[in-house]
Amino acid sequence: MLNSPTQEDTTAAAGRVWRNVYYISDGTAITAQTVGRSLLTQFERRYRFRDALIPFVDSEEKARKVAERLADDQSRHELPSIVFSTFVSETLDRIVRAAPGVHVAVFHEFIPRLEHELGMSAEHTRGLAHGASDFAHYTRRIDAINYALLHDDGMTTEGYSKSEIILIGISRVGKTPTSLYLALQHGIFVANYPLSSEDLAAQTLPSALRPHRRKIFGLTIQPERLQVIRQTRRPDSHYASPRQVQDEVDAAEGLMRLSGVPFLDTTKRSIEEIASTILQRHSSITAE
Amino acid sequence: MLNSPTQEDTTAAAGRVWRNVYYISDGTAITAQTVGRSLLTQFERRYRFRDALIPFVDSEEKARKVAERLADDQSRHELPSIVFSTFVSETLDRIVRAAPGVHVAVFHEFIPRLEHELGMSAEHTRGLAHGASDFAHYTRRIDAINYALLHDDGMTTEGYSKSEIILIGISRVGKTPTSLYLALQHGIFVANYPLSSEDLAAQTLPSALRPHRRKIFGLTIQPERLQVIRQTRRPDSHYASPRQVQDEVDAAEGLMRLSGVPFLDTTKRSIEEIASTILQRHSSITAE
Image (tube, rainbow over all chains, first blue to last red; front, side):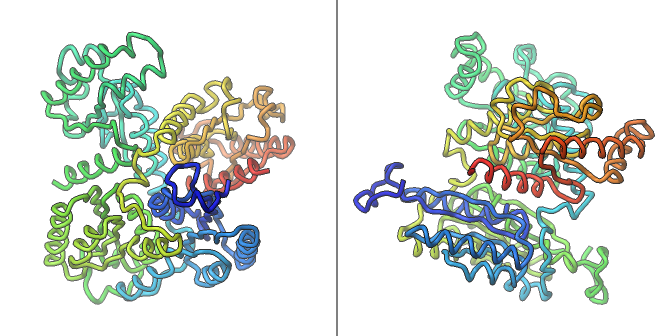
């Protein structure tokens, strides 16, 4: 799949050059991967990236093996591999960075800077970030996931007083993925409730939700997009018909406006973007 | 809560100094937060960090407002705030970095380095990383979440041929959070199946699972830890008794060994660590 020189300047997917990318860490390598993927999306016009995740490189022996793998990789490819690493151990960092490759050692420059600014040396202990070190936080997160599962899709409205956020909206606007994301990544107790045809006809929040209005956040979507999504799930059903979808979207947005519920159009937003928007609003409410 | 100078060198939580931390980006600020949190865990011996997420700072006007907020924040605190930012726009980056604070501009140094190494200029378009730009990937992720929910806790073993990973284990070892994490973050189709008392007695995989043995990954846990977890959920039940827990763990590990199923002890591992370990193994299997 390596392309020829004549194709190098084309922007077509087929003409892009493959590059090997490694995400390496003494921990999960999640931070290395997050940074690396964010940066590499900026270069996809010309390149395609082949990922390898190498987590838990937590001994000199393992680091040397990784260095050998990078050297071996280099010997078989024309272009150097790109290596994103997040070592908290300086020794391991040094071993891996000595291997061939374009190295982006994410912590390498930032740790000394923070040590200087914060007037203390870093712990240099691996696995503090994505480890299970904070047990209370960890338990809370598991509880949040269980809460989201139990309160998914309006399965029950009991226990809403324990919720921190209640997402509402019609079917297939993104309530479930957003709830699970907020629970998993942020340990937030999120319920989600699908607006029923009765709710839409009544144009008011159901009584079970009214006491929690300040925690409610609505999701909506462009009818054209929703129609495509529903059509995939239940082809040519009433549920997926343009008329039905348009009516539901109109009624849901009307209800949310009348009830003073803030809402967000999810059409062109990823789960992360929806979650970040809700979190930002949520934290400004709780800070009031 | 700001502590007095005499407390500054104590390592006790009560004596730690509060620092304000900002995660700022023209996108979701997820990368900024991931990097910042990873780095700051290295300094928690002396500091406590108060987070604020400021996503979607995608215009000069918004960037100037953020800069004002940072200046205002600085005027009310003795110690400078710590600002992690991930701007792909150089202009916005410059505006925010001119404000008071300890700035860790994550992309600032890495983008020029990669531009140099990759021989092209970055797109400088925000939101490519955590946006919904890649529609096929996005749809796959939503489908993976739905798959994980439908195949949670052995609800059905139909559709296992579509799965990429099947997690097995006894109740409360971490199957559900791990499945959801892999679906949400990586778009992987993960089913999970709780080993029943019949399975444990028979010491073989149930027939529905046997054709998929190469996709099966087991989770186990130390009995002492599992006992605490179950005790919280159903106090003083047979389910939570030390004897029952010990028997189940022994039988499950025996079954997995006999069946040649690789397994992992989740006791001291976070969801991320479990997922990274499984992914690493999964990718080495699929690469075979």
